[in-house]
Figure 1: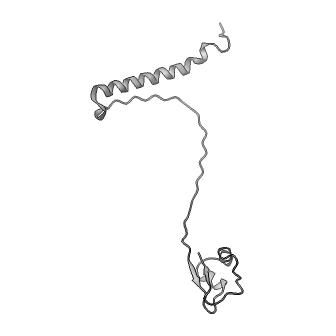
Figure 2 (figure 1 turned 120 degrees about the vertical axis):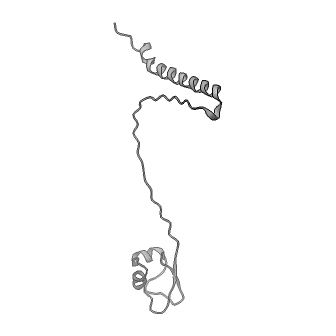
Length: 112
């Protein structure tokens, strides 16, 4: 005989899980009452099989300490880039508003 929709059959799994969890809690409490919380050694665990989809994003953050250089006679962005293992584009990005063709002696620019 077929059970009607919404019958008691759909509650069997949740009721069984709650019953198992209740028994586990009672067993643990019983063990704690008998031997005290510091020496309890009985552990009962119940698990319910589940399916879970997870997405993990990894973010790598690097912290760079700003380094500056004071322009001396003959300095160019090209030479500073070569000397500091970087690119001219990076120096331009780090120094907005600085004209690479018009560097002045004593001017401070960021190189990292």
